[in-house]
Image (tube, rainbow, N blue to C red):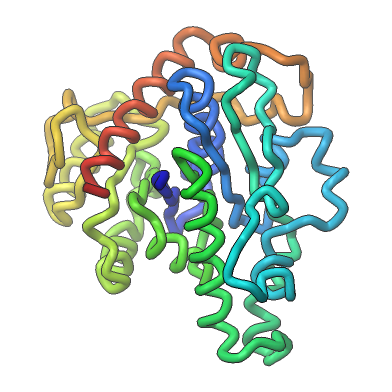
Length: 291
């Protein structure tokens, strides 16, 4: 079985989608591991970033149809029918699958339909959670890594994604606004019973000492675990050991030139090296957490 990594934070604008897409590229192109990206954000940014111009050819295909439709009445799921099998246009590992389970704004209406009683399933919430679990298990049986991009805020599916994950990666901006409310999110993860699977990853790291002290105080106060060069770093405050995610240019390549290129040409030598480093530590920490 593969590993499911959920990238989540209640706050928006912390780099969740950029992190998911770049990690997917690094794990396939640099590590040679098969990956499936599951887009759970109705804004469909990960879907657009990976498909580019092909997004318009989806013809209504969306995870929403699988969760409340009649396609999953049986117990067996053929994931080849619900995923796009290869969305990578990187040339250095063309034979390694980078698959996608796409999303669309239709997912916004799933919970509205459940709340309004318009889903014709017995116990709709439990049915949707069960279907989502079966989808993730089927993907894990086929791919070495399943990367789940979640929307900001809280929803039935984002909670399910945290519960179904082998590892929860929490990207957080390294400024005052980025750390605002993280105490409450840690409490939510604890209430869900998944806090032990979560690790923080600091994004857009500001080298100025005042922000570093602010983050250090947050880590010491909450005792959250961060992605670190040392194993299972608890309450880590040594910034030399913390792994941070670099500030990248927006994922504009999806809307621009779609010429096949290598991983290094896409992100530049420095960016590719930093992303690869983060990917390696994420993979290692996933194995530590999952046991």
